[in-house]
Image (cartoon, rainbow, N blue to C red):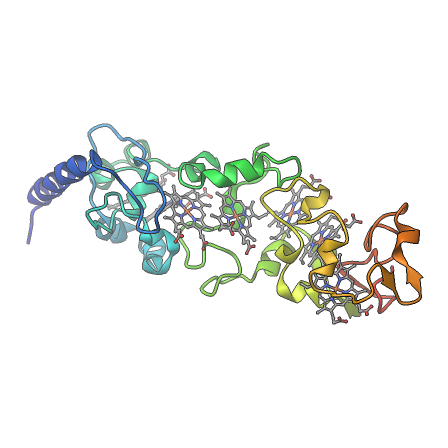
Length: 258
Ligand code: HEC
Ligand code: HEC
Ligand code: HEC
Ligand code: HEC
Ligand code: HEC
Ligand code: HEC
Ligand code: HEC
């Protein structure tokens, strides 16, 4: 068996290789841009197997997560995924006291900055006028995404949560059962809402009838039934003109009018 010292020596050599390779052009396998992991002075990379010794629950299904695909270098070293977000872990693994454990590893906590390092496009989305209050610090990315679980993207095949269950945690009014349900919701809330942010109020994907017409193809539009919807334009569109105001479902009306 390797002693801790020898293991450190070997990971130390590994670290030098990583350092050398970091000088080259780094890319994710997915084609994105690699960012340097958080810096922890004097620490070396140890790889996920080491983390697994003490954080069994988090590591158990980690190889099935999207984030397990993060590689620190383009040399194909794959098991540094934990350390890509938490920083190199050797000092933390060796630390004895709880306080020392905490001071030798980065816990990104609730701040979105840790995620923006790689998902910069999301920062731009949250800067749009209507957004979930993540930039205001009232919510975090991890309210909706578990960076350790398979299916970090809600609604993806491996995810424990379908998208609507996730929303139901906080939005009971739209997710309760209705006598007359709107089948659109079965496709998911995100058919109509851009949940990171939107230029439209209520984070709608479109502000006008196009939001509805993408599924309700109407041959005669803007004539619907016997009425011309242009008559109603002053009042609003399908959902805001006083017509189908119960877009999420209704207990009273099968045409979702109240
Ligand atoms: C020898 C056991 C051990 C190893 C190996 C280990 N950890 Fe830990 N880690 C702990 C303990 C114990 C705590 C809890 C300290 C506490 O109770 O707050 C902890 C806490 C953490 C925290 C939370 C720190 C905080 O400020 O709340 C993170 C993040 C973490 N570990 C990541 C890792 C990563 C990543 C690896 C692999 C590179 C790793 N750990 C390897 C024992 C270990
Ligand atoms: C994509 C970035 C990312 C990756 C990869 C990642 N973590 Fe984390 N980790 C986080 C974030 C963010 C938090 C803080 C979560 C929170 O406070 O809501 C966290 C928290 C933790 C904690 C503190 C306890 C907890 O559950 O809050 C431990 C321990 C931990 N991670 C270990 C690991 C290990 C081990 C791996 C690799 C198997 C890993 N992490 C991979 C982002 C990541
Ligand atoms: C070190 C870079 C890095 C960091 C930091 C990071 N991610 Fe990722 N993330 C990735 C990569 C790489 C993928 C895989 C992308 C792909 O396969 O197209 C990914 C995938 C995802 C996905 C799934 C995307 C999809 O289309 O299925 C979500 C959701 C996600 N990350 C959220 C987060 C959150 C939340 C945080 C912060 C806690 C975070 N990420 C931090 C690199 C990172
Ligand atoms: C209110 C819940 C919520 C919050 C908060 C949230 N997300 Fe998401 N995110 C989602 C949902 C739902 C999806 C799936 C979108 C879809 O399928 O159309 C998603 C998808 C993603 C994806 C996959 C690519 C895409 O756009 O479909 C990434 C990456 C991601 N989120 C990163 C983040 C980051 C980074 C943060 C914090 C800055 C964050 N998310 C905050 C709910 C949320
Ligand atoms: C952890 C709690 C939480 C989760 C999960 C969550 N939201 Fe929210 N949502 C909020 C908060 C907080 C606000 C801001 C409320 C405010 O500003 O009054 C909000 C606002 C909204 C708004 C705008 C409301 C308005 O009146 O302008 C929409 C639309 C919305 N969320 C949809 C979703 C969808 C769709 C999902 C699932 C993908 C989701 N939310 C998941 C907490 C959450
Ligand atoms: C068919 C499109 C559509 C779907 C699917 C949809 N919404 Fe909405 N949602 C809307 C429209 C349109 C509004 C704005 C209504 C208005 O302005 O009167 C809205 C408004 C909201 C609001 C703001 C409060 C309100 O009722 O006005 C929240 C919160 C919300 N939706 C959450 C959700 C959640 C959660 C889901 C999934 C369970 C969901 N939505 C699915 C179209 C949709
Ligand atoms: C993701 C697809 C989708 C979107 C987007 C969508 N719907 Fe629907 N809607 C359906 C499906 C599927 C049904 C049930 C089958 C049917 O009646 O066409 C339905 C049924 C309805 C019904 C009840 C049936 C009826 O004939 O009266 C109304 C009203 C309705 N939708 C209004 C809207 C409005 C208003 C919007 C825009 C805010 C909208 N829908 C957006 C898929 C969608």
